[in-house]
Length: 426
Image 1: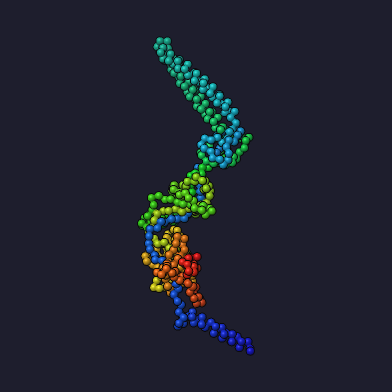
Image 2: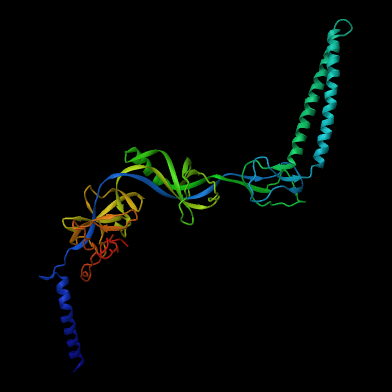
């Protein structure tokens, strides 16, 4: 057999093999595709809490860099790093010999001025009593001037004594706040000065603690517009919850302190500060967290996240049943809530939203809807029949689509469990 004859025979065989599938794909008489069974839920509007997930970072409630107020040599370190100190607890001791001497000198000057004041007072009283009888007006004025000078000297020496006593007290460096001190950056024998910029240690208060959450200025404008047009009913107070870096949800609830009045020119975001109780010190300054803020309630539809997908253009899409066929609709979601999208546009009251059987589903495909339910975890279960038996899974695979036909944008790849149990979404 020549090669052209062999090639023609092979071509004829492949044509005969592919003919039945081609006829089926083209919808030949007697080979129409059966409707694909899908699980649906009825759409209804309700008041839904509008929450926003925001990245945040913990900030110390109070933090102090401890520096010396006088110069001197460190003679003792009086605290243990990591052990809580209270206001006034001693931290460092400086050599105080020079300050003790200064106090003694200033005290002597004060005592001298104090002793001189009664003498000047008596001279003034005598000159005043003898005015015109042995004392002239000039003598009275001189006595009055000496008395004023003695009083000023006493006040000056008293101020100098007070300041020197303050400096002597400053040689014992104490904690200005309650918190946890870090390891000292100096050691015994180091010389420190009042003008130095380096801190001797840092004290941080951890309970309570601040968390700064970041939000975009565009979202802020959106929220204000929703409040103005009545779409969003704001709460009396804004609270927040945290998810820590290891994924666990923090039990404490945060209270709004204040939003920032400045938008970052580089990121287009502004910070919102919340305060959290932190008795167990699980949140440390600098720690990254994920916050959820509850702003209020909005009239919207809850769409299970497994029932909606993003198209290639970034639009949120889902399938509904319309005239016995799958219809792809575009949704407008403002936030998410408990594994659901909070949808404010794109669905009408009573629409049948397809939540199961989305695998290989395309727009315009005939479907056979069956009632379903979605639990709090987003898992789908088909509703029981009247006789108590579970219906066939809504995601029964349909025959393979014809060549050149691809699933429409937004189609999911979820499948149901066997019919012996309620169908669960993957």
